[in-house]
Each structure stands twice: as structure tokens, then as C-alpha cells.
Image (cartoon, rainbow, N blue to C red; front, side, top):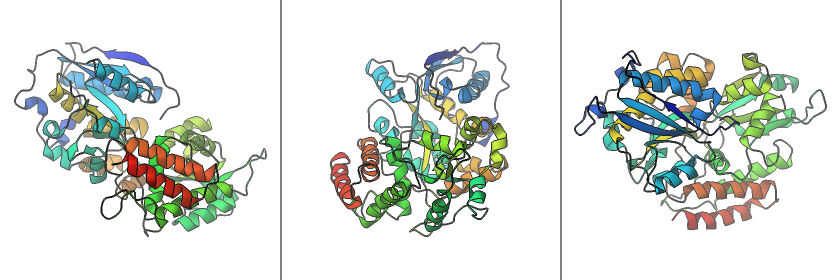
Length: 441
């Protein structure tokens, strides 16, 4: 996600002169269009859909979203899409305020780490009846589960991404390592140790392996990737919260050791890791699909920087196979929307083959729909293939409940306790367990 946020209101007025020459993406949908169902608005009824989004305020994605809206307008001349630009860090708070005054947007862009707060609220509505079972069955199971609450689909994964391992080929070569990514956590730590002995030409420290350890909800969610790789979980076999386990303790020790040994920077945010990787000071780290565009920009080398790095599945650890998590920009429909059927049709349009292809070409976005992910245009490069392969090796996040976003923050705090304060992993796990049992009742 871009570092540069702009708040604004972007209105795309739909002119009646637009011709019906838009996307043919609905050819890929096997489910019936909601607009054709009983109770849907008449074809000529003027409709305005307000769409709260942070992506419309970012230069990297603004053009693609405007093009999507224009193509939807060509197919629906009576519909006006009114984008409400809100920065990523403010969108949850502002949309809840808007809902409290009866002015909630019809559609809201959300994110996996903050989605549980929407799902457990009364400002968004279930989507099962609006999208149809064929559409819902086409979603990858893990992403569908991540956007489900109390047995109902409450959001649609729009721009999904698994976490994959990025590695710097030039640093690997300087450290005398093989020209390949590590296959296991043990090998990853071995490689990281050798890379961390390097210095830049100006004498700056090089880190072998980056992990996000700043106290932020997203970093707590990311920590689950490591907990899962150590064969741990948030819940026990009976579905009860239990993180005071050997697996979680081992995960916290992993974090503590890589910072203590100088393999990873202390207190890092994801944006810090992206910057270090882009300037040749970080050998490996895990991130989503957006890494490539960020590297091109921050390195100052554009597409030429693509030859510097490689991408691979997350190395295997205690489970014996690659385990990762997926995150996704999601879309929800407000409970008070006057046009939920048309809002659902717009969501289906945004996630159809042609629009996801447009978004993919613009920003490397993948699809959470199984029928689209297997298409050749989403598997044209090694980068595409790795992302798609990892999407079939991810574990769903904990079941959504009203305390989950706070739980992510507490997990991040436990990581910070062992990496910054030097607290023992055993104590941090015990304290975390007590907190999560209160939060995730």
C-alpha cells in the first residue's frame, strides 16, 4: 500500500451518452445477476452508489479504479459511482462515524486485519443472498472463511495476496550462497546469518531476514504466519483460546533470536522492511503481491530492479510444508444501502475476469476466485505462478469475532515484549494467553 495518502472526494458522473462497450467479465460468472432478481431496481431508475475507498486516493491505483467505474457505467447508464476517498488509516473510523449519522457509503473498502470490526458490527449486511451460491463457492476457501462471520459471508475478498518470501539475489551472491531461496526455516536462518555479516559499500549494516515487529494490528496478524509455521494456533482442539503453548513460545523465541542476533531490525514496520530491501540492505522478508511495485519505486531503478530479487514459497518449518496466511482488500455493503442489489452487482463486476485482469496488469493484484486464478493471464510469469501456488498453501485466520482486531494488537505487543523489552518468551506467551481469553470470548 502506498505511503502517500490523499483525502478527497472523487465523483464519476455517468453520462447517458456512454455506450455499452464495457467489460465482458460477466461471461465468467455462472451465477445470475442480482439486478435481474425480483425486487431489483428498474433498468432506467437513477441510482447513485457511494464507494468509500483508500485506493481511489492513491496514484498507483486511482486510474485503474476510475477505468473500472467507467466500464461499469457503460453497461449501466443509469448508475453513478461516487467514490469517497478516505486514507487507509482513517477509513474504518470515518465510515463508522458516517454510519452513525445515517450517511454510510453503499460500499466500503476494508482490509483483512480490520474486517472483524465491520463483521461484528451492525453497519454491514450479509451477502449470501445478493451474490448467489455459485459465486460464493468459487471463492478460495481460506479467503471465504476470512470474510465470514457467524456462518454468513459478510465481505468479498477483492484484492487478495498470500505472503511469499522475497530474496535479494545480489546479496545472496555476495554472501556466497546458492542462487535459490531457502527451503526450510533452518536454512533461512543459516542464509540470514551469512548475509548479516555483509556491509554496504558505505559501511551500513545489512540484515539477513526481516520480520515486522512494531506494535500494530497488521503485524500481529502477520505473526500468525510464523505461529502456523511452528505448528501452533490461537485455539486448542476444543476451540478454546490457548496460546500458552510450546509452539507459540517457540515462535516468540524465533522473533527474539533474530533481533538479538542482528538478523532483523528492531521495531520494524512493513514499510521499513520494504525500504531496506529496495536499497540492498535486507536479504529476505515476507510480503504480499505489492512488493514488486514498491521495490521498483523505492529503488529508483524501476523495472530494472526486477532482476535483483526472486520470490518463492514461504519455507517449510515444523509442519514440513510451506504455510502462509493470506490477506485481502475486501468489499462490504452497508446495512442501510438503498440499492444493495446494484451494489452487489458492482462488486461482482469488480471481481470478474476482465476487471481483475485490468487490476492485475496495473498492480499485480490476484484473484480469490478459483475459476479466474487458473487462467493463463494470471500465470504468465514466475511471480504470478508463485503467488498462485502460495494461495493454495495458506491457512485461514482465526474465526472472526468482535475482539479479533484487538487480539492482533496484543499478539504484536507480545512480539515487541520479547524483541524490545527482552521479556522471556514463556512469560510473554502466558500474558498473551490471559489477554486473548478475555478479548476473544
